[in-house]
Amino acid sequence: MFLRRFAGPLLAQVKETTGIVGLEVVPNAREVLISLYNKTLNEIKIIPENVPYRRHVEAFTNHRMKVCREEEDWETIEKRIACGQVEELIEDAESELQLIPKMADLSHL
Image (cartoon, rainbow, N blue to C red; front, side, top):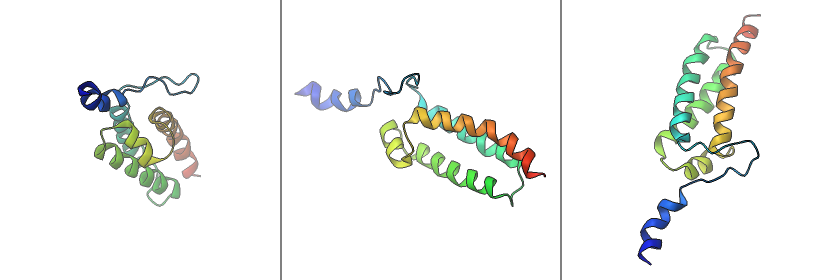
């Protein structure tokens, strides 16, 4: 009873697998996401403010950053953002960072 009552919540927060082949668990996903979102918000500044892509990226990145700062638990982050597992969110953020320079080139055409 004691172990289940006090250790249960701690044990429940340990993610052992994503259940997705090739996608490893990131134990410090929250910190990784915050770092990636900060980088995204800095990188997106190369695109003019009037470009809809920039406004869209800033909006969803700010929302996700807010959730990550408010929540410590990866499960709650996943539920509130509702766009997959934290590891998938990391992949999405990394992809966005690769897309920004390409979109910047297109925004000047």
